[in-house]
Image (cartoon, rainbow, N blue to C red; front, side, top):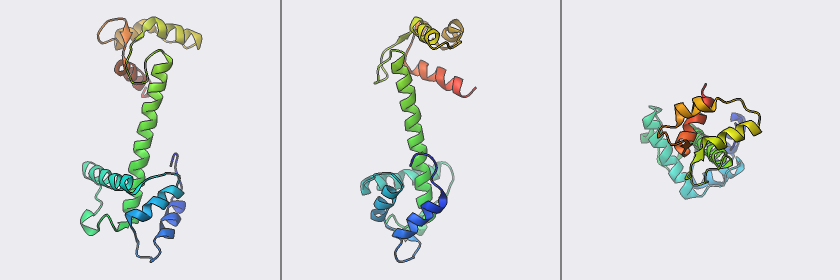
Length: 164
């Protein structure tokens, strides 16, 4: 469900599986609904997603009225919260993968190990004609002052630059 799917399509897909018009679908009916919306999920995945959505709703004070239904009867508003939570998780995972891919392109390892020397960062920036003050960057981000950065330091640099 990358990107935003319009609410009309979501509602139509949900209602298609709410065959009795009760306003509820079962967990097993969510499997083909998610599939139609572009996500392959097992019933166990969806049960976990439902639980995660509940936990998130308590943390963010977004009530799901949990006492009004069971996991076997999922109303549309809860389904929407599940989609919202799922999309947020997918976005976070995509962001993390982008950080890892960038880290490896500078010479780090996919498992987030390894260190990148500032000389390598400087060469890569010059290669792509990026104007970056490497000395200022090193001073600000090389927390352990060893002339290299690890994944956490690298991620912090990129996060700071993204949020500027």
